[in-house]
Amino acid sequence: MHHAHIDKYANQSSHVHKIDARLKLLAVVLFTVLTVTVSINKLPSLAWYALFPFLLLVIGRIPIKFVLKQVILVSPVILVFGFSCVIFEREPVYVSFGPFSGEIALGWVRFLSIACKFTISAAALIALVSTTRFYDLLAAMQKLGVPKMLVLQLGFLYRYIFLLIDKAGRMMRARSARKLCTFGFLYELRLAGSMIGSMFVSSIDMAERAGIAMEARGFTGTVHTLNTLRLKAVDAVFGFLVIVYFSLLLVIF
Image 1 (tube, rainbow, N blue to C red):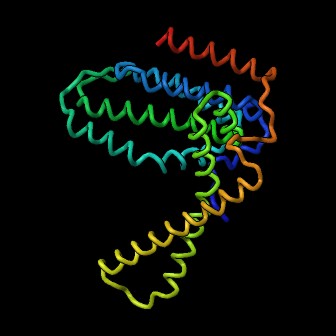
Image 2: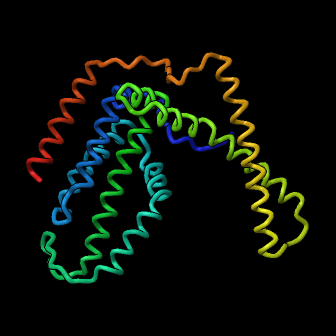
Image 3: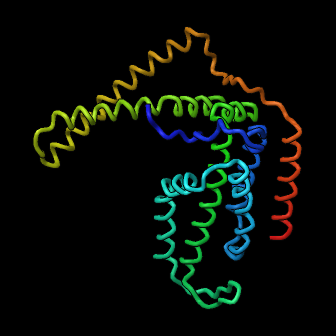
């Protein structure tokens, strides 16, 4: 399989990689909540919020190009929602940013707010999954009391989605090899429906066989990893810095 895993940089070695997964997860979740709740009247303060994911990415040696690519991949839905604000919220508001000031439609201000908050939050999430092995992240969620079923579903999704992608790729190659001419839209639609149905049936069969094999090997639903989650000196330093940083954000902004 040749797929771009979301944690492709998680096996690197840096100070951020060494931080306990539970601390990083809690920090990113709290940071996301703080970022989303920033008032639309305090948009310039988001520059200070962006410092957190930026430092994590730089210290963790995560390529900025990779981060931008991931953000762009998941941005269309947010952009559509943002542009809907531009269309429906046209009342003028007065804005001032440094030496620049003037009137602008409220929709554009809200669009900028949504885009900035999304980019900053997405960068923080990418920093988390790029500096933490996915199964360490699942173990951290398990330790923090996240419902067991949700942890299992995420684990299975990550483990087997690539098998489904491979199977879909093989079906598309087989279809292309047997396609000698261009068919009409309705025929192509029926063909796509039959392919999806075939893949759905195959996935059910594969899931049953995987479940039987896992039960035969003693799987109980608990996530186990080779890395033991223990707090270290670097975790204490990280926790202290995060508390100070978040406190300053709340007090100043």
